[in-house]
Every structure is written in structure tokens, then in C-alpha cells.
Amino acid sequence: MKELVKKQNWQAYQKEIADDYYYFARSCIRQNVFPAAEEVFLKILSQELGKDIYDDARQTTCTGIAYHSGIIPFETTMTVVAHQFALMNEAGYENFVCSCVTSFGIYSEVLESWKFFPETLQQTRKALKRSTGKEFAIPKNIVHASDVIFKFREQIAARAKFRLINTASGEPLKVVDHIGCHYAKIFPEKGIGGAEYPYVLAGLIDEWGGEQLDYPERRHCCGFGFRQYLLKSNRGYSVANSKKKFDSMRPYKPDLIIANCPGCAFFLDRWQYTIAEMEGTTYGENGYGIPVLTYEELAGLLLGYDPWDMGMQLHQVTVEPVLNKIGIQYNPEEKYKGLNNLDLGKPVMPGKIKCL
Amino acid sequence: MLTMHKDDILVEQLKEDFRIKEGLRACINCGTCTAICPAAGVSDYDPRIVVDTVQEFNENSLTELLKSDTIWMCGECLSCKTRCPRENVPGYVIQALRSLSVKTGLFMESEQGRKQFALKRTIGDHILKYGYCVYIDEVNTNLFPEQGPIWDWFHKNRKEVLERLGGSYEKEQSGALRKIPQESLQNLQKIFDETGATGRFEQIENLAKSNAEKEGIHFDSTNSCAYFKKMYEE
View (cartoon, each protein chain N blue to C red):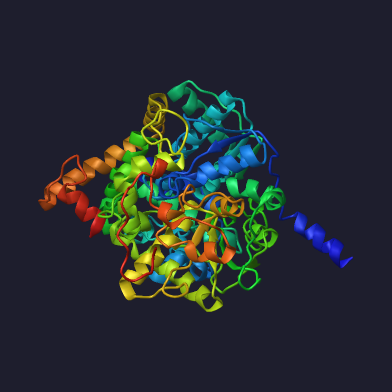
């Protein structure tokens, strides 16, 4: 009976994730900072899982960062979102997958606004028609890209060459998951596990052999803050909030951080470098930082893709410590090479945090 | 007798924003939003006081709020939405306040409000130029030193690195960091014109220019001008 109740309760925290035929929307931040992560996602979907996913050259930003920074009206965001839907309709798809947690929050927020304030839907339809001549239908299914990886986590595990196991000790790797505020805090019912028990990344850790690491500030914001990070004068807000998380997780000795949101992954990577430069503090072992991966990068690594073809060299926090623990083979000489082994020189190594 | 038009009353304008309708019910001043707020943890920002002030619907206190730095200190994480026991959303209230502050020009009365100019010149202009809020060509370690030396290496070698990683840099095809089709950029511009973003950008630019002239700071259309640097960095 207890198990039945538990199962029934858990149903409330599930969401519908389409099985196939996706229209893919890229992220402003992810394609700049982790430019191969979205290619890895598309490769896993199309080549490993045999799914139909469309990468449209005509797609654009959702404008979420501009909206949350207070420089454009919500009416503009709603109409740009409608434009994205129109492009999806024209391409013949009904299931929308976005690669950004801010975007996922925006799409969810726009749909809720249209639902509870129907006049805004009508205004948006008219604004899109007047400005671009386009009409649109609302997608049947809208999810974040990590939801799709979660849905197929068992199939990915079945094809994986590695697991989240320390090959030297045989113990599971201790993994921090960072969900990103706009995944489930705005609309808990739209995130796997809701806001209280977010499971979208924890489910990957469980399925792929690792151990979830719980720590006091697990659900705290990374500190993006939109206009707080985007203005150099305000950036203390951002680094202070990330530091709060690092200080909280450090006693539990994480092997790895995985992040849902491209912005969060970026901040958790780069603020470790910054904190080291500012005060000499490092959070990983032996002077390294704690490696930070996106969920697609982690999936790609476990599937045996070459780390340097996946852009792992573009993380400021060196990822080799976690590659070594998992037992992933790599050629250090190829890390900073271009296509066909083109010599591109090497980056300057930071002074306070150990990097390779 | 002088009568005030409805549109001149800030309280009435604020009430018309549907963000207020969905974000403000009845605040009981419990302070849960402040307890969970990342901004409150690093500054003297207090969302409870903001919401309590707004729910008074007093013209004078609302005017002061719209002229203040306070409304610009929220990080829009929306953690407050999850936790409020009365389903208020201080983050939505902030969105409505910011919108009204820009619309009325009162944002120029605060140091943080004036910084909207630097955000328009970066995020706003990037959308219309590249189709995305952020674009590699515009990001450097002078503006973003925390990007670290790895970014300097990537930025310098971006064409070759992206070739290896399967990106579409400078190419008119699908893929990361591609050149967006003109049709998409034109549609964005037309949507911005239609829905008020262009008007908001012009408002921010015009008031920034006037302010720069008043303060005697060099202002031009580039982000190397002294006024941009002051708004972005100081």
C-alpha cells in the first residue's frame, strides 16, 4: 500500500515528453560557451537513438535574457516565441525542444499567459501577422533538451562504454546536479520531479552509475541574475551566489558537477577560475577545480565520444581529473588542435587554479 | 479645476499590467520571499518591502519606487514564485515596475536604472544583429574577464576550433554560431517595431544621450564611448 501511494504521488511529478519528431531550438549561451554540446545532443538523438530532430537555420533567440534584463516588453517576447512556433509549423513539426532553461521558462510562461489571459494570445496572433505575415499553432509538446535525455537515459546507458564509477576504487562518482531556477521553480508541474524533488539530472546520475550528492545549498541559484551578471559593475552578485554553493558542496568532496542550464554550467565553471584568481581558493582535488559538464557532454563522454571533439577543452576548469576517474582514454596532444591536427598553439594557463 | 487623465496616474497604469494581476494577490508580509531571495543574500534588497509598498497603491510611494535602484536589484531567478504561501510573485511585480519605470522615463532617476543603456547596447543590439542575445564576436575578456584565458584562445582561433567541433560559424546553414538568414533578422526587427521594443530602445538611447550631454561625458554610437564604459563598468 505504501509503495502504491508513493507511486501515485510520484505520478504528479511526471511530465509528458514526446517520443520522436522534434523541432530543436538552440540556446544563446550554450552555442557560444559550449559550442559542441548541442551538436552532441543532436548526434545522440539522431545517430544513437534514431530520432527525427530538425535543426532549423531560420530559428532565433527567444529573447528571454533581454526580457529578464528589463530592456524589452513581454509583448515582444510573446511575439518572438510565436514566430519560433510559426517556423516549427512551417517545418512540419509539433514537438518543440529547447536547449536553454531560460528559454524553457519563457516558453512555459508565454503559454501560461496565453491560457490565463486569452486576450494576450489574440494580441500576439495579430502582432505576428501584422509584422511578419505569419500565423502559428501552439506546439503539442514543449520540453527542455535534458528532458529528452532523461526519457532515453536507459537506452543511452545500454549503449554507453563507461559508467559514473571510479575505476580505481570501484566506487560511484559523487555528482552534484544543478537544475537551474527556471526549469521548475516557476512552473513546478512542468519539470520532472517538480521544484521539491527535481529528478531530471538526478535520474541520469542514478541510471548511469553515480551517486547523487546532497548538500545544503543544492537548490540555490547559480547567481546569473541576468542584468546582475551582464553588467560588469554588478557581477559581484553572480560570483557571490556561486561561491555560496561551492563553499556548501566542498565538504562532500564532489567528483563532478552536471548542470541543466547553459548559463549555470558557464558560471559554475568560470567562477571557480575567478574565485581562485581572487582569493586563491580551489574546490577540486590537488589544486584543480571541480569539473563542470553539461548533461549532453556527460552523455557523450559515457558513450565514448572523443572529449576534444566534444569541446571539453573549452571549459576553463580542467576536465581531465574526472576523465581519469571514469577511465576515459584521450590524447593530451590533441586537446588544443584544430581539424586534421592543425596547430593552434595553447592557451595561457591560469596562475591559481591548476589547469592542463 | 485641473483633472488628471487616467494614463497620467502611475498606479492605474501599473494595475493594467497583467503581470501585476497574476503576480500580486494579497501579501501577508511573511517574508518568505526575502528568506529565499539570492539578491537579498548579497545586498539590502528586500522583495517583501517591494510587494508591500506596491500593494498600498499609493502614487507617491510608487513614484519613489520607480525612481529607485531597488527595482533593478532583483535577479529574476523567480525562486519567490515557488515559495510564496499566497501565490504572489515578487519577480513578476518587479517586471511590471521595471516596464513602467522605462516607459515613464523614471528609470533615469536611479544609478541602476541608467545602466539599462548598457544592456540595450549589448544584449538588445546583439539580438537584432546576430539573432541571439550573445554572440562570440562581441565577447572578449576585456568586457568579461572571468571568461579566462581559455576564452582568449578560443576567441582567437574560433574559426578553426568551431570547424573541428562541427559548428557553422560564418556559414549560412544550420548549426551553432551560424550566420542567421536575413529573413529571420528582418522578422525580428519587424516584431520589435510592432510590439514596442524598438520604441523602448529609442527611449533608452535618447535619454542616455541627454544624460551624457548633461554630465559632459562623450557619447556616440559605439560601445567604446566613455558613456557606455561608465554605465557598463562603474
